[in-house]
Amino acid sequence: MMDCPRCGTRMSHNDETTKLTEYVCPNCHNTEIVWKSAYRVSA
Image (tube, rainbow, N blue to C red; front, side):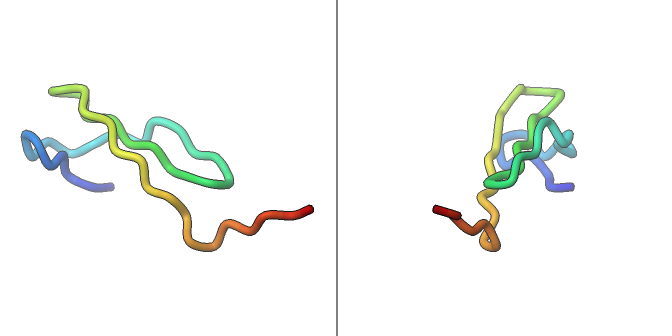
């Protein structure tokens, strides 16, 4: 888990897809999206 860049509170794992992972802060509701580097596009 990561800490919120705004308030320093530990962020919760909100959602995960094949492309990205989304974290949300339970304190200030800041949302951070982390794109996955291993994501491959299939035609």
